[in-house]
Length: 378
Image (cartoon, rainbow, N blue to C red; front, side):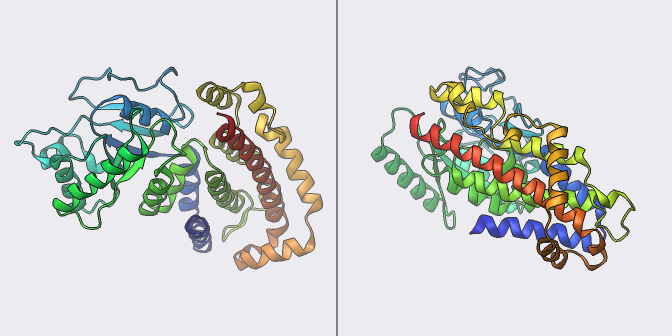
């Protein structure tokens, strides 16, 4: 429910900007979500678990080009940046370990590595958080930065029993150090669909501004049906924004432009959806390799043409069909949801919503089939 409300809030924010004719705000929001501009800092010991976590957040394994490796190839006191190969403006920053030395100063660490400039900060550990890492958390929070989290990374040798014991011990450390309402998220670095990662993602998205929250969601690999649903909702909000811009739903509609959506923008949105839902050939081949599956079996699950290839000709065909098929009742419902001054262009606006939302639903159905096979057999 929280994710549904978040998508509705995004849609209301976009509609409010349209009502005020803040077209530049809509354009900026659309662009930010399409390129997934977000930066996340990850601190903690540079070990195999941290490297695997960084790779999994980008949909990679250690064998892939550009993967984080263990031991790290960066000097111990250097920053290392790992852009997402599919979403290059989504960057993970590997911060040096927080020293356990008694002379450690949290303020110096935060200033040296500009910790507060990141959209979120993740403090990782494999046993329990150190006193100095808690000091960093406290200092970051004192600077009015809410998006800082403790994440316990599971190792290969851990069992359910040892993980529970580590989590309880970690919470105890945080309580002793005076952390109010302490939270520790338990994450399996090589399989994000397990343990607490989805709860962690929900918490982080709830703390981020709406646009950044959706940008993060769209850049992450898709490994659960709930993520497919959340991504579909986010893309439908994007479609509404694009229809508003391309269909002339501003306070000063542009003649003729309102009669048809800009297919180029539609192609960008659906291309982003294909990549975000991990339906492109490269993503499916990588996923099959990671989970020990035949890539041909995953590719065969795609029944929507746009899941295989997003072409302008297919997008235009769908738009033309929607223009012919849009019913009076559907148009009337959309009119009620639109700004009053824009209702004259409601037919083309409705056609775009119908065509692209249907396309996103079809691609989402393919993504759910891939997730089902991967989680069942991978």
